[in-house]
Length: 486
Image 1 (cartoon, rainbow, N blue to C red):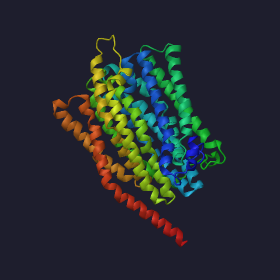
Image 2 (spheres, helix red, strand yellow):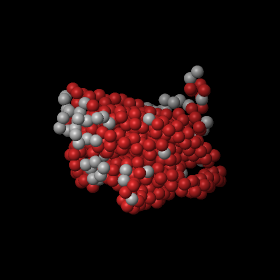
Image 3 (cartoon, rainbow, N blue to C red):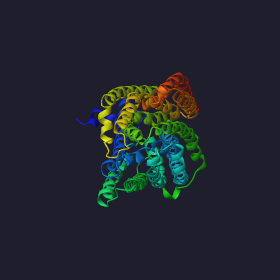
Image 4 (cartoon, helix red, strand yellow):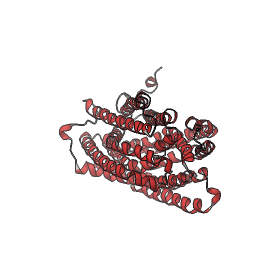
């Protein structure tokens, strides 16, 4: 028996899912699955980059150069990608209210904002990457390779921005399937190009392997952008459609997107600053430790791919129901999402802890180079994974609370919580505790700053949530009363 026969209220899964009616628990599961798959696919391609340079290119140093700059990319790129949350929220509210004209204006304005932000980020990243890497204490033996990778990577940022804003709007309207399709196709092309450039064209030594995977990444991002344009223009009967004759900047809708998106971007920026600080502290341990940490970071991503999907979609679920005046679904959405995250998180965390050495060993290999410390790399990677993987569910629960507040048009509160529980706490941890106590000078102790700040954030959100839920319920009651009076 097909899944659709068991749950006929999920509507046609080929299109948008209405998240305001029917069995909300199963709809959350179904809506999350394509996002989980999309995240897994992105991670598989990232893993493919690392494995290509590790086994067929320059080895551990190339891997450290490609994977060790993730916190810098998050700081420069994901801050602005975070603004796309505003597009998600606005599209979902208009979807719930069945306001197609306003939704299409928001789409047009969002894509123009995405292009503008992408160009700005590309310029900043291209010309500033070497300075940023020095600020992060990047080991001297990998800094040149890392700069090469970043300069090429930043050239593709406008395409990345366009895709993420467009995909956020599609998810806001209940469509998480077509963005997944684009990632599957373009990611496969990315992997194919990696092997073509490195094995077919012989781009291996002297940093050529790093250049190869960077070029492959930019090409795949460009293709994702083209797919998204096609998805937004192809269907005549879809709720949201990109119409070129109306493609312009609409001040009202753009302001609504930015009003919800800028605080989300500021929240990402706050996290990213602390990530760069912690990465900078980790870089002082040397390139061998950096290789192990890079391996752990990639493995952690698979855990977050499952858990963060439910944290991501709650924004769309809550915003649609807020726009549709379904206050009873707001409480269901947060409880279902938190329960799913906790259940999956505990199981996956235990698995990651028990298999930490075997998992790190996939990426870190013994080297003939006498200055590469294989044992130190393995211990650093396994130690970080033990800390970050075991308690990953706290991170996703924190983001789930944040998504609820953003979906009910309260984007400032998550930013303030982040400032207090992430920025302030982590900076104090690194510059006071880690710097002052020598027994903390190891990778597991350094990265303990993350789960501690996640747990603290969850505690604060737990205290704040009842207030904001009541406020959202009052807003809905007021809208219903106004509608009844007319």
